[in-house]
Length: 76
Image (cartoon, rainbow, N blue to C red; front, side, top):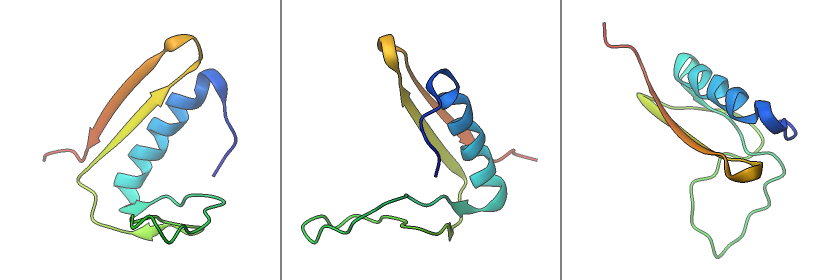
């Protein structure tokens, strides 16, 4: 739940993904308004506990910079 951080956006999102795995919690979507025609699993306003083994971050930036990172819990 933050504004756009331009060049740092992908790094901040990556940190949020790692923290989601660590905390086993899905971050919320801010300002979500329910659409009765869309039957999707949104997480509005508050984080939700969930079992997360892997998460994906997809970032598409100005100037055509694109990256997709997949994070997983460490295998001990």
